[in-house]
Image 1 (cartoon, rainbow over the protein chains, first blue to last red):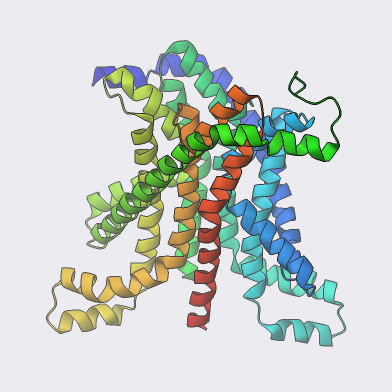
Image 2: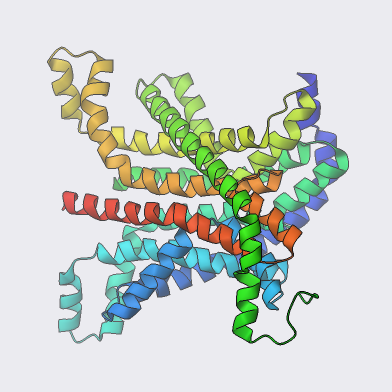
Amino acid sequence: MDALRQQFFNFEIMGLSWPMLIDGLWMTALLCLIVIPLGLLSGVAAALLSISKNPIVRWTTMAYVDFFRAIPPLVLLIFVYSGLPFAGIRPSPFEAVAIAFLLNNSAYYGEIYRAGILSIGAGQEEAARSTGLTAAQTMLYVTLPQAVRNVLPDLISNTVEVVKLTALASVVSLPELLYQADMARSVTFNASPIVAAAAIYLVILWPMVRLVSRMERRLG
Amino acid sequence: MEDETTPPMMTPLERFIDTFFNEAVIERYLPAILKGFVVTLELAILVVITGTLLGLILACVRSYRMLPVNLIIITFADIFRALPPLVLILLAYFGLPNVGVSLSAFVVIWLVLALTLAAFAEEIFWAGILSIDKGQWQAARSTGLSYTSALIYVVLPQAVRLTVPPLTNRAIAITMSTALGMVIGLADILGAATTAQSFSGNASPLMMAAIAYVIMFLPLVIAARWLETRFRWKRA
């Protein structure tokens, strides 16, 4: 029991590694600030293209979405980070994470928005068009707001997943929260810094997980 | 990557093929990647079966509404839904040996991902059970069925139907996380590919890995979308 406490809940080691963890937390926050808005926006683009009237655009987008939903994000990240340099493109760890997440997130968010748009009845569009709105205005002011409201729990739930996915950046040595915790672990030969990092993830994500549970139950 | 074996004059297309679809490299490392494919497949099947079953059991136990037990289940589900699996994997793989528990990379990935899937599955099954109308319970109980029989024969069959689409999507996403095994040295598809890539100095193994994952997961992704559409029609 004491060994367990020493190994996982050593507060002295947690205290020593705290500054490193906070540095990592800022990097995780920066990463989230870049990849989440990018994902939310590129997702709208993917969704709009996937319901295009042009079958070539529609099918190409669907193929893109399915392809990137069928590749594990870590595989994509490693491909971008250590595969592309063979072709003469050398992304930094941060760029590699941003590119891999853009490809992955646009597909996942896109699929969610698409379901949302499809859930809006044709009557809404017809009514909006008959008042003189253009197709673009109808999408922007009538269909999209209702679509987003319908799939809000899925959007939030996917955003939780994106925050969790930023931990993958540690694999390409981007000094985010988990990378810093693992560095502290390998220096101290003690797992407490990772427990501390887990606690930080919990503080950030637990409220979001609870929120998703409550929203899903109310809508279901 | 210039070396003696690279012909001096290559068109960009030849160079691209040499880098990402190098025949010699593919032939050399195909057996290792196929072995990795089997490891990934075994893990995927294990994770899906044990994770879903555990989630179903937890959701059923939760329906008996015993407060202390439910607090434990809810806490478990929340923690495993909120934590990145990689955090748990590093904790289990590097932390546990120091307290006398040494688990292989395969077992660590299996345990962490099965528990993660169980947490999500519990929430999905629970939402399914809650969505069944009270009248169903009352009617079942009034015919003389015990609570457990009503749960098993009346409520669950209806609840499980509702849970299929979200559960499929979640199971696919978590099964994909088996690629995390590469971080702790598991020779799954990605693990075999990164090893082959560093030995061969060529990106073809990574391309093979990407293709292998697409072969494994694309049918599932398409099937999941089909399920969603089907269930949407049913509801309308």
